[in-house]
Length: 73
Ligand SMILES: [Zn+2]
Image (cartoon, rainbow, N blue to C red):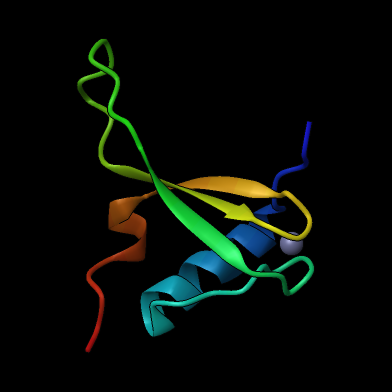
């Protein structure tokens, strides 16, 4: 099973996505892919989430859409 990001790496990732609407892997600099996490019917309170995975090192994180915020022009 692949590792996750450290808390610090995760913060850097979210900050880059929020400020630049793009981020590279904070651990290895590899390309990141984003995929929506499907909502679970038995967890109706769960907000829209995005699953971010590094194609190079396999680290992944799930972030709330609200943590990234609206995409800036
Ligand atoms: Zn990586």
